[in-house]
Amino acid sequence: EAGVAQSPRYKIIEKRQSVAFWCNPISGHATLYWYQQILGQGPKLLIQFQNNGVVDDSQLPKDRFSAERLKGVDSTLKIQPAKLEDSAVYLCASSDYLRGSPYEQYFGPGTRLTVT
Amino acid sequence: AQRVTQPEKLLSVFKGAPVELKCNYSYSGSPELFWYVQYSRQRLQLLLRHISRESIKGFTADLNKGETSFHLKKPFAQEEDSAMYYCALSGRYGGATNKLIFGTGTLLAVQP
Image 1: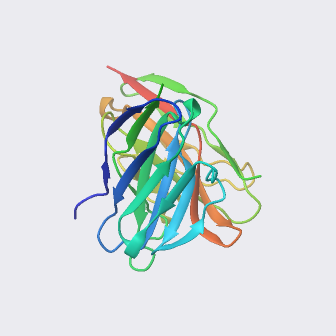
Image 2: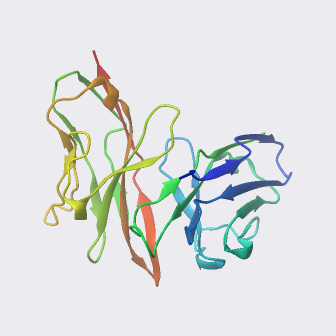
């Protein structure tokens, strides 16, 4: 099966600009996650969707970050306006809660964001 | 607070030597523990989970609830084991499920 797809792979923007990331999960996976991984740290969950509903967004900085998953498939994560501390790799993952193990998350290649 | 601690940023061993990557956790409840691995230029992927009690690529990990540890072990390291290893904890947080909390990772370097 095709893996989780993300685009773009790299993005460089200036602070106060906006940026959007796209994720296409594995076909049929109902659960989608966005993680932020700052250099030297482990991934940190930003938001979790179950189909097109938000399950957990407790660590999403809602004043600048937003995410949506229309139709319960693809998802976009947006940052507006970006700050220097947003420089990180943004990982998308998906899991199949109903048929497979709910705990095995499949990760995309990530988007490396640099804010200058 | 739920937390995963990996005390070593880097572990360097020689090929054929035993490996132990340390992981300690704090969690009030029954946790699910995992090891994820990221090889150079590859995606983060699941290596093993404690509920499966399996050995993957020669690696094993035993959940010790008394010591709140989930150390990853391999008796004889291979050069292809060189990678970044993340310990992760899952549990129910305020009704959400499957949320993973990751440690900071340990880079395993196996020298020839």
